[in-house]
Length: 201
Image 1 (tube, rainbow, N blue to C red):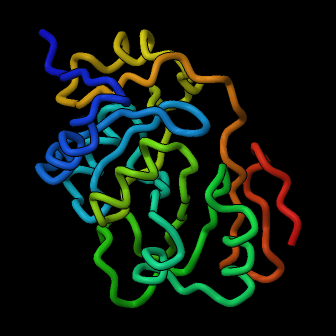
Image 2 (image 1 turned 120 degrees about the vertical axis):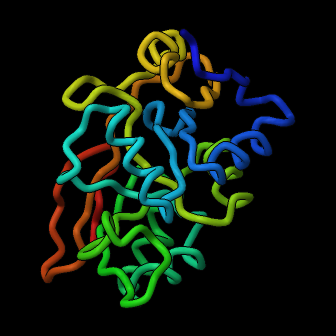
């Protein structure tokens, strides 16, 4: 039985509907600048658990978050002047920066205790959604754990239509490498995954 709801990314009500789903602890799958991603309110532990269940992913693995930009990131993570320069240079775009979380933050303590990995999306839908929702959203690929990234909405529907999820139809995306992951919690900085951009620092 289909539990999902479908809306086109360019529908004028798509952002508003996605915000309602997220606030209720439901999942949203939407196009990003790399592949389709699965989104949940990163301040709600139960919502993040749904992400891991939908992906059949081990709860021991990390999950990154989309933020709207530098200002939002400062509420959740410690950002040095050097890292701020990196953010200005490469974001928005396919770069994930692993940061030390602030002692007091509103992210789920179950998933963001020792580190928080942030992204600022250059995709119009994700960018508008995070800004309007006003809270960080999970930034992980919408696929079964261990499988390939998904670029076509048809495959997204085949994989996730049985879930309680809002499916945002952005058509077929151009295949891109995943985001580059840079850990700045240690010196020297360390590239954990080489991806779509070559980070110079």
